[in-house]
Length: 118
Image (cartoon, rainbow, N blue to C red; front, side, top):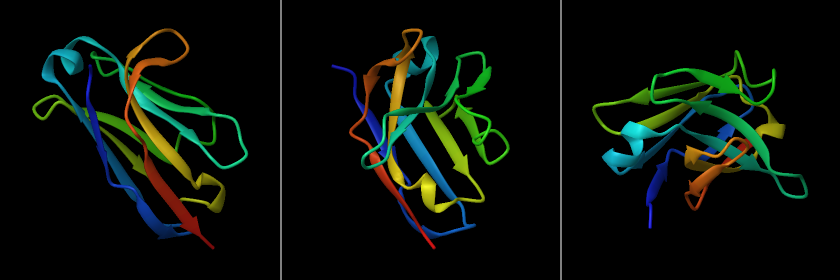
């Protein structure tokens, strides 16, 4: 079983910033892409961002690029999602994943709540 440990969620006012982090086993981190999905109440699951083990990045929608930045810390086997200029519609549970299948991650964490208040 692959374990992912997420941190950094919380409540922030609109326009603020949060930084999510996610760690996993070094063997998984070294060989596979990692990234984030999110799901808001009543909405479909949404791809946020992904980063390969070569540090190539992709974002699920133009609204993320420029506001969200995904990075990898190879020394700590951790992926980070810096979220700036947060909006109320960014409120969701954010799930970290590892090992990209082409449309999803094979393994996923339990999620961390992000709440943006107006």
